[in-house]
Structure formats: C-alpha cells, structure tokens
Amino acid sequence: MLIVENKLYDEVESLPERVRIFDTTLRDGEQTAGISFTKEQKLMIARQLAKLGVASIEAGFPASSPGELEAVKAIANEGLGVEIVGLARSNKRDIDKALDANVDAIHVFIAASDIHLKYKLRMTREEALRAAIEAVEYAKEHGVVVEFSPEDATRADLKYLYTMVESVVDAGADRVDIPDTVGVMTPTRMKYLIRYILPAAKGRIVSVHCHNDFGLAVANSISGIEAGAQQAHVTVNGIGERAGNAALEEVVAALEFLLNVRTGVKTELLYETSLLVSKLSGIPIPPNKPIVGANAFAHESGIHVHGVINNPFTYEPIRPEMVGQKRRIVLGKHSGRHGVEHALKTLGYPTHPDLVLVVLKKVKEYGDKGMRVTEEEFRKIVEESLRELEEKEARAEEIKKNV
Image (cartoon, rainbow, N blue to C red; front, top):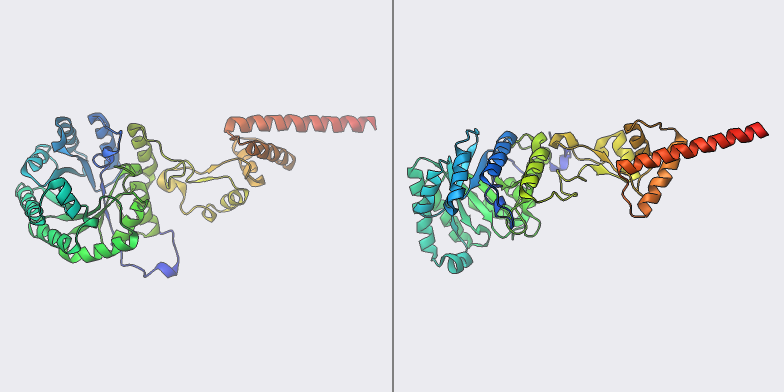
C-alpha cells in the first residue's frame, strides 16, 4: 500500500519491484555488547523470522565457537523454508565450518579498506584480493550460494573496491554486499557508491549493509535501494555493534508503505517480532522508536486527538494494525475535550459535557504536576468527578426545595 500519494515523487527513482530482506539479527545483532543468545533462543528468533517472511536468515558465525556451529546447524536443519546463511572469513577453515553447519548460503568477507588491511589483517591489497577470489571459488565448488562482502567498503579506495567486486563476481559470487562498517555514509554518498559499483556486479544482486553510528543506517539503506541495490541487511530493533544496524521494521515499512516496494515480509507481524527480540536480548524498545515504539501511534495533544478520532490519517502515516500495533490516546496536560470523551466512552462512562469538563480540568492538573494519568488514575478521577457532580446536583435540588 502506497502512503505517499504526491505526484512530485512519482518519477524520482526507478525502483525495483521487490527487495530481499537479509536478516542478520542472529549474527551482527548478537554482536551487540552484552547480548549472547542461547541455541534455544536463536531457534525461537529464527522461527519468528521465517514466519515474518524474510528472504535470508544469517544464523551466525560457525567458526567462532563449537556452540555457535551447533546453533547454526540446528537452525539450518529446522526446515524453516527460508535461506539460512553462515558467515565465514576468506579462508578454507571458516568455509568448512559453515559447510559443516549445513547452511544454504555462505557469507564470505574480507577487508577492503587500507586501514583494515594494514592494522587488522596485515595484508596487501593484492593478497586480500587473491584470498577473496580463492574463498569464493572454494565455496562455490561445494554447491552453496555465496554472498561476498568487502568489509569497510565505504572507506575503501573506489577503484580497488570496483576491482574486488568484479573479481569475486567473476569467481562465482551470487550476491555482493556493500557494508558501511562504521556508519560513515550519507544517503547521497550511498546512492553514488551503489551506482558506481553496479556495473562491477554484472547483474548479480547488490546488497547494502548499513551501521547506525550517525543515525543514518535506515536512510542509507533506502538510498542504496533507490540507486539500484536489491537487498538490505537488517536487524530486528536495529540491534548490533556500537550504535546498531539498520532496523528491519523501519526499512521494511519505508519500502512497503513509502516506496511501494514489495519485501515479502508480513508487516502485521513486525511488532510481535520486535517484542520477542527485545525480550530475549534484554534490550528495551525505546518508546519513541518508529513503527514498534509504544509512542509510535500514541496521541495526547487535543488538536491531534481530535484529528485522529475524525480521520486517523490526519496524524498517522499508516494504520497501526498494518504493523501489528494499536493506537493509544494518552491523557495529560496537553489533552483536550475530545481525548477525555474518547477515554470515557472507551471505559464505559457517560460522556455528558459537565463530566467531560470536570475530568479534563483534573487531568490537566495531574499533568501540570508532572504526573502520568494511567488508566487506574483516570478511573479514580472519573469516579471522584461523578461524586462531585452528584453532590453538586443534590445541593442544587436542596436549594430549590428551600426556595
């Protein structure tokens, strides 16, 4: 469903009809400081991701530990009906471990930037290029899908990056991923880079893998797709190293509802998926997080509440049900008459004008004191207001009798 209906944007980009969603919650997401999923937890998340409808699940890095290999293998043998991917460095040992895990695809990577080559791998450009080619060829000999990532691509020399991509494609790589490893891209630069790299990919799927160090991971992912990428690496809730990765729920929602690009994801399951990963990772969902945050479809301002009650699209870009969420009308010092009426009606109370005005006054007093008006507090306010109005009416009747 296309939400932005503005002729100004109709011909801005030539977009793909469909984009693959490559979820790396169980690999890059688990690299978040403090997160360590058990095999059982990984299986739970993998099942949910398959139910959600992602194209690929990067289940882990089999060579990193015996337990990791066991977990990846368990996911691969679960029969989820989705491509299961294992990460591997550009060497035979890592690739063999991934093959031992029975994965459908191997995500092979090696550094492409000079800073990584010099200070991490202590390799020359020529040595890294040769290792990449040999690794891709070796993996392809074993009949698996191979995706290749030139790590830290966005800080690599452009000509060298082009050569590396072209070389691994010639060696048999099925997909090429462009990682913004430390999140230094901007949308404009990402668009330029993807357009520059596309000819080197020779028709293979080009992917984007964006980190969020400057808060641009989602924007950069969308920009890369607008430039011609056909796959996005994402994590649920944007978990990942340092400031995290591009958030699955935000990338998918932007593609589906803003750009009218299909992803295969059942968007109505986004919220429940977010809740599961939050629970198992121990990382709470920020209230103001787009799509899945508690406040994403919450309204307090009287003007906004009035608009939303009359037509939700006045202050909501999509229906909350489209992502598995619910609308919330919140009461506080910014509330107006319509918000109080809605709350009274929802809880089964009368909505006559006198009660609305008394309750509204008390709600604003609560808000001015910095207090939250919970449902329990609201019920207390209403009951108290009803008693006050009854007493006022009784006094008025008494006065009439005595006149």
